[in-house]
Amino acid sequence: MSAPASLSFPLVCAADLEAARVAAVRLLAPFAHGPRMLARVKTIVSELGRNVVQHGGGGTLTLALTPHAQGVALRIEALDCGPGITDVALALSPGFSTTRGLGLGLSGSRHLADRFEITAPRGGGTLVTAWVWL
Ligand SMILES: Nc1ncnc2c1ncn2[C@@H]1O[C@H](COP(=O)(O)OP(=O)(O)OP(=O)(O)O)[C@@H](O)[C@H]1O
Ligand SMILES: [Mg+2]
Image (cartoon, rainbow, N blue to C red):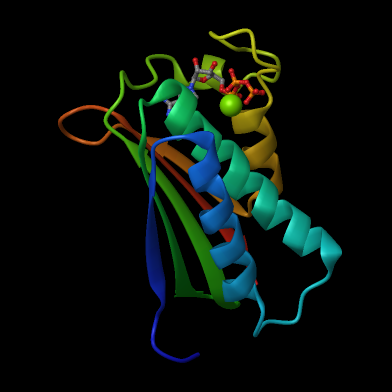
């Protein structure tokens, strides 16, 4: 693996998601992958990014290639300084939404990722991190 690549995208509105999706697809390019891998990554980037905009009042999406036991992982971090998630288990229940959404973005992303974490950064907000083994 060459030098670790890390790219950050400010997310203010839904239109900002496209640049992050394009960058994620570019990062995958050197690795052998099929359409399912592409769909998984694009969906996770879109759903976590959409939550940053819709629920977190905007924030940052960061993509990084990181080493892991079986090779290389794409790490997707969605960070915001919004109100935070009080009940993480509830937020991860399929169908739960505080904004009349489908309530499938978080649970679906967790399902698609190889590793998934939701943490509350010091000072408030939400950090959701998903890893996909490449
Ligand atoms: N970054 C965030 N900050 C605060 N709350 C969040 C954040 N992300 C998710 N949530 C909470 O978790 C709930 C579930 O999120 P999820 O993405 O699954 O559904 P949704 O965004 O409401 O609908 P959709 O299915 O359209 O994504 C949200 O309704 C919201 O209450
Ligand atoms: Mg959502």
